[in-house]
Length: 349
Ligand code: NAD
Ligand code: LMR
Image (cartoon, rainbow, N blue to C red; front, side, top):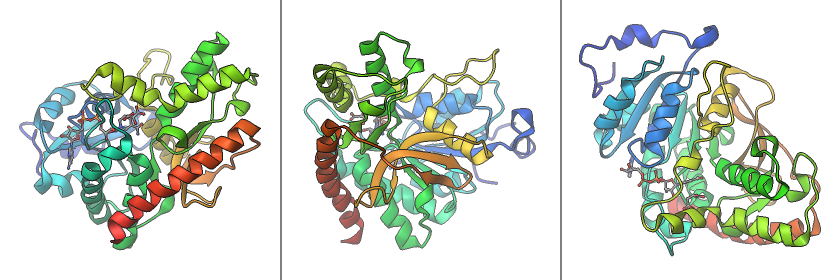
């Protein structure tokens, strides 16, 4: 049994065998970077997710406090905390899903690529741990720059001989969340009724909202298309500037569109929840994610995928584009190619 920061008096071995609501098996989830701006509320939401039976919270600082706090919630998941590199392997052993929001966030004036210097090494080390301790886990990679950290993770897994492209997913859900919100504002409807596919990557012009494919079917003036595309592409910067040095988006990372029952309207971390439902075998779980892909000539690209027991089991084509989107796609691919190469050569060099 792995050493834990909160073993006193808790009988975790018995509780670990408990099954999630409805008799479905519960899944084991680790959050790496659990004490951070995203990590803390994400830990809270994973503790509330009925599909999670064991929750491991790992960070290099403050994970004992976050663990003690979250573990007092009277929901099913057993929570254990892990602090610092010597406990990484115990944090990862046996996990079904590993969510990685570890690393530094932007300050005003920075691009996501400015985070590469520090976050690339953090992601490499954490993924080496995943390869060693839970090579079959589905990895949700949040740390920026996602366009480079996903290729870094892929190279680490290739080196270790554990790479399964379907199980490595860059989290781009926030781009879809923003697109739904901003499009709904323009259309004057409820954002919960809107679905905007956002493809490409997770930075600047690589974020390509497909306004021609919005559901419900809608038409936009060219002024609206320009406004919406720019706002969606710069949504992260809008938050970074408004927070004025106090970090980047954390709360909007935690999507609230799903409810689990009429009685309990849980907020959920949407993408992790979609992965969990896929693992459970639910049908028709479709999300946008940055994943190894053949829909373009690039090795990675974000599009809609179908999530299942094996991760991203089906990758959907981009579909018909407007002329504006075709131009945007070329720009996105140019920038993405450089970011992907940068990540790959960080490991290969
Ligand atoms: P934060 O600084 O609040 O938290 C980061 C946490 O990572 C801290 O608790 C820190 O101690 C921890 N950490 C640092 N090095 C670590 C290591 N080696 N192992 C484990 N934990 C480590 O930052 P945040 O606001 O939570 O953002 C985290 C990352 O997520 C940033 O890179 C940010 O740019 C990115 N982000 C991505 C998206 C997205 O949509 N993909 C959205 C928002 C933020
Ligand atoms: C976002 O889109 O909000 C995140 O990638 C954080 C950032 O740096 O913009």
